[in-house]
Amino acid sequence: MYSHRQQSFIAQLSAPGAHLNFLDVLLGHPARIPLAGSGGSVFSGRFSERDDSHLLGHLPVEHAPPAPTLYFRHSEDGYHLYVRTPGNHFGKGISRGRHGEIGAYPLQTLAPACLELLGPNGPLILSDIPVNAFHCVLRERASGMCLHRHKRFDAAHTYVFAKRNERMRLTLNILERNAAWLSDPDEV
Image (cartoon, rainbow, N blue to C red; front, side, top):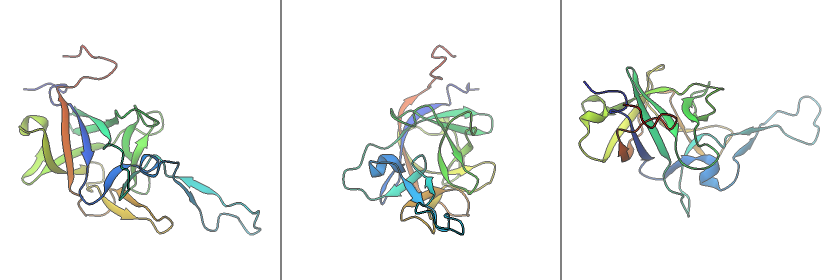
């Protein structure tokens, strides 16, 4: 029987067709979306904005940054993902927002979602994967929905959501196996 640490790993996450990363990283600036109808009955001259910088996007960009590095922490129910890429989102957990959007959230705000790795024959754990680069689908356990591309009506970007029964093929490039918590590097 393997320990949770032995089934945990650090990997870069990518997707075919465009670049996958947090929107602020892909755009090179904060991803602020003006909200239509947010001025109330009297227009004050300023629209309200929604900050989507922390959300995962799938965009073609000219000078793409490296794929995000994530810590896949094994638990009895699946994997909890944490950002390991240096920058604004380091240490945050990957979770599903209230509308199905997938992004990096501070651990005090929203607990990381539990995700399952799905291969062609069903759920996978690290011991099932003998290679370091492989294709999979991620399914959020609570909703049963797989991660997929999604266009919001009020933004030009393509987001990553878990709200419909669609699948987005992902590529994981494992950088380290048997990865411990940052706060407990001597974990067995």
